[in-house]
Length: 467
Image (cartoon, one colour):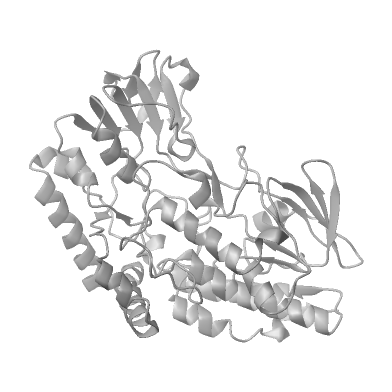
């Protein structure tokens, strides 16, 4: 968003960032084995190609360095107030947002853009007596780099995106690893590798860069086809996963425990080259059960079985919301005095993922139904930032007081989107957070990134209230 404003000649803006540096999840998460699950040359800005990515799927350190280089190159670092948290934001009748910061100071802005992300604070399972455990324990999102796991007995609780990357690395050094997998996932091979010097040199030409990028993007559309429940795509993904699983594991009981009872696409599709091989190691034990509680020295599964361990690592995802207690990152109060939480509890809808009725001059990046399931966040953010920046230009050019999405237009848009989403894989019955209590699917846009971009080329001013 900041880069887009700068590219349009708008310099009067501030970015509030609670962390000490840019990068968001790629700054905060540093657990071993962390790589992107989208190819590097798609997982970047279209206007800022990076031929220097060393691997097909870049590491955390490379992605963090790339984000910082973009912020530096485009002159946005001077606009960022690091280690600064916005606690509350209240819309005033004069058409401005009044912010209260964590240090007690106040700021006022005509336009407010939320880009805080929805999954930022580590989530721990609700276990009786979790603090009873005498050994070390931490969440993958708060990795203890000061602890040497060599020769230790380690329990990894969880089997989703972080676990499939953590387990292989921990298994290389730990004496024993117990992987508690309550719900199996579809883990497709990543086929990661380093680029050759010749390949990286070739990618410095725009033609080769664009050719590779287009090819990788098209490969990613297989996931979109699975989300659309196309039988060929689902069978293709199933075949890839089962082949990789059987190539690594001989034990039929373990294979059965690792095979999901839902189709690929219902939950997040995971990627790893070494998770299944790690589970076949002599020092790794799969426990296909949830955890009930830890004791002082062990972890107890729901069947009563227990394993003595020295360390417990929770790979159990992140809380919805931006705080440890599940509250939003910023408590917003809109034009009518309702909080954002109240407004969305009443009607969990957003106009094209960027605007919510009752909250004038407030926009979001990848908000409700704002992101295609197959598309990298960089490309989604580009589309949203371009759309929002055009509204900012309109507000400044015409000296508007407020820009607010109309409730009727937002509801109509949301109903149309939900009708499509209810026919997709996310509507199937599998564990996860994609659906709310009424069965509405809130994170995703049903179409491709190309469709999203086309639909947001027009501001659709008739769907807004301007004053």
